[in-house]
Image (cartoon, rainbow, N blue to C red; front, side):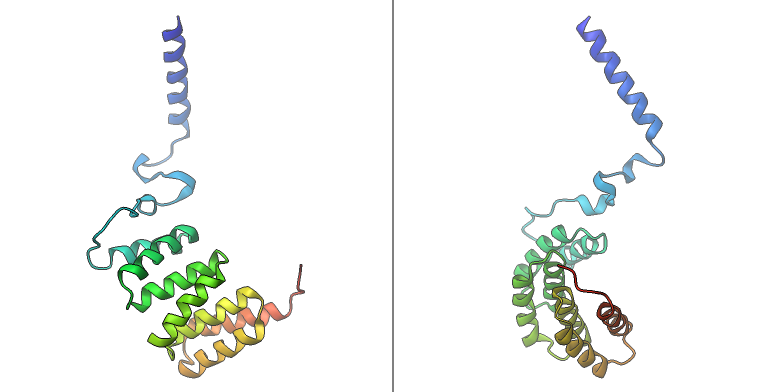
Length: 170
C-alpha cells in the first residue's frame, strides 16, 4: 500500500511537470538563468585562454552580480595584470554595494589604464551609484574629453542629468 501511494504521488508529479514544460528541458535552469551561467568554476585550477573572463562576463550580463563578482575576483587573482579582470571585478563590486572593493580595483586600474574612457566611465558610474553626482560628473567629462563618440559616456551623462532631477530619498 505504501509503495503504491509513493508511485502514485511520483506519477502525478511527473504529469504536472510534463504539463508545465515548454521547450527543451536542456535549456532550463534555476531562477531563469541560462545553463551556461550555472556552471561552477570555483574549484578549477587552470583556465584555458579567457574562459574565466568569459564566464564572469556572462554572469554580469545576466545580472548575477554576486556570481560575477566572485568569478572576476578569481580572474583578478589569476590574471593580475589584465585590466579586463579588474574592470569586471570593480564593476561587479559596485553592483553589489561593495564600494571598498571597487575602490581597491579602481586604484589598481589607475596605474594600468588611467586615461581610458572605460576606466573613467566605470569610476564615474561607481560615484553615481554612491550618490556623489559631482565626482561622477567629473569622471564622465574626462571620459568624454578622451572619446566624445563613446556611447557609454553619452548614456552615463544622460543618466547623470536624469539623476539630478529626482529627489533624494533616505
